[in-house]
Length: 178
Image 1 (cartoon, rainbow, N blue to C red):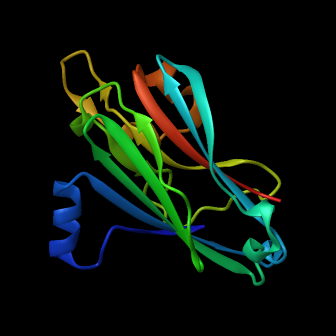
Image 2 (tube, rainbow, N blue to C red):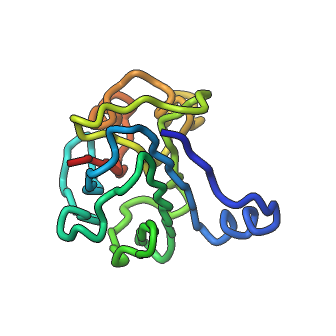
């Protein structure tokens, strides 16, 4: 799996960040993808506990969405606005429905992060559900400073980030290939 974050156009990228819009394209490659479908979910955590799980897209519902090659690219759109998170996914020849989630902290505290750290690609296990993106609030240190990067650049399991880093509210986006 590789990723492309945001826009290559600097002005458009700055505008999307200003407007609270985050875009990330995830590219999956491997011969084992051919013939598979995928399910994308978002899992919401509050005070370290899972409180909600929603399906953003279920490609197993129709053969139309079956992968017919060794690669697939998916573009994720997130918008933070007026106390809510809006999510939509773009794939080959489709947009998913728009889905909305309530935000409990200041909308400007949330950020989109992936799990690449400094790597250019990640190997994922097609037989498992894989966490691919996170929408998080920062980890707050004792001195009052905060950090987003240390949260997703760790070996802590995504579902344990809230408890480990004392993050009050966050979301994990997962993908499962079937």
